[in-house]
Image (cartoon, rainbow, N blue to C red; front, side, top):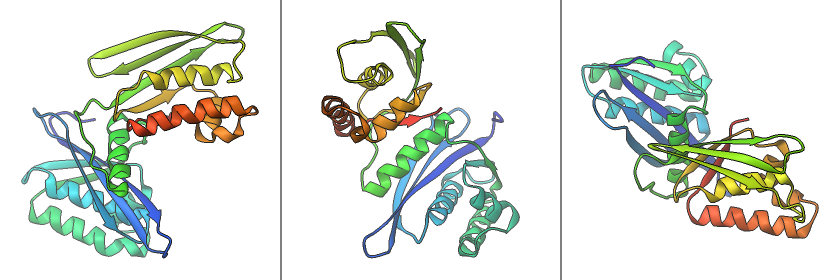
Length: 248
């Protein structure tokens, strides 16, 4: 990422309503030299996710300093095609022109490029968008994304869980309970989730496929006791605003 320049990381969330209409949310993280990251979000009625994503770009242009360059980062290729090349879905053309007109009016030299959602600021933008769509306003400081690494070796009686957040790193050795109906890799994941702070997003790396599958759908566990334990952990996370994002 080029230093000394304004950057915006944008994302959106969208859900089809029972009546067929669409409800979306957008979120963005704006980085300007010499200032702390600023977060913005909003809710809107839109026909699909691409429109919500492009609206986030428009808001970034509106919020960025005038007479300066702005690099917008998104994981949406349709948005990039619409803004940078005038292509993509027809439904985006009018809003893309509005983005460019706004940039011209504010004398913002605009660039739009791709970054994966796994980037830290993108994770925050994604969380902001999800909260906005649900009608929730994100609270707290910026340090609400923690990187989690789960290290588990075959045949070992424990896993090593490392959690890194701004200005802090936590490492825990998680001994497996051989009598538990919860698989060892899931025990490690639940231990990692227990380390989260309220309103924090966990970017989890090296969670096993089994752990990911059972976290997303506890009912897949073979035994009812395991289903219950995982479901309770999920409920506790939801009640405290903790989100889990798997990074492979």
